[in-house]
Length: 361
Image (tube, rainbow, N blue to C red; front, side, top):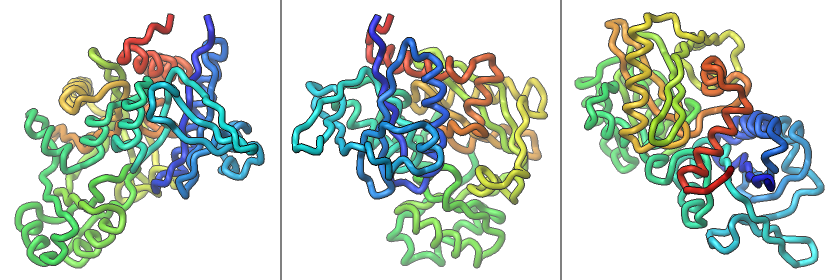
């Protein structure tokens, strides 16, 4: 049987570019463990948004030097199903059609995890790993996520959202938040991942400053009631019959699990399984699957929870393309479930093909 050509796309213009390239290195190494089955096509998107076919080493991706590789070739992704992939623009003015069987978008944040690129894949009729356009977009927007989960009876933190034009009434909005949510509050850009742009407000001045800072990342802001408790995460994989891993626990080095605590501070600790009762673990696993289905997810997602000091399970957010770095919780949780890194990527690719009804045997 001929090898399946899988395009791994990484980088992007989002503020999670650097996390994406490290995740991509992990994914490429994992897929490469099944080199008898897959041929990998590496497609990088620079911080300025230029698409290139990268033909260097995984180490160059990991250390960030990939974008300057002399063998890079400019390319574009074609939405035309006839092309089934990419158009490589050659130096002599000609072009090469690079057909692929599936796409693994290792892209975090805006334009990679919000349904934007998923819509192009769907137009091109090419199987791709992860959630579709609609579920990606809904999970990316924290305000929409809250609304859908609440409609399905899944507990989330109390929240109030703002769009940018509400800034003209900032004092009134802050007064509403003080009355309805109380301190502390978490101020979040509605459409950013990896804890980018999130601040914790303990008083009025911090709330106003946090809202202004969040609007530098997005045109919508969500302010949530602070939850006192433990941060927990659960990995989900599957299409029609999703499987939930055990639960992992985050012990953040900083006041909360912000970007620095997640990726830079070695004092942050994770525990698998979490140091909670089996009943709580089972409740979180069941809730994760329920939320996964409610949001229309397929392929994979990581569901993040709080266990409050009142022993309440509260869903914080759903990440449709969670980090795949060596310290990321999703691959570690699945590995704890007995699924090796290589098998994880193999299953995710097969789930993408299954959804598109492609015969890969």
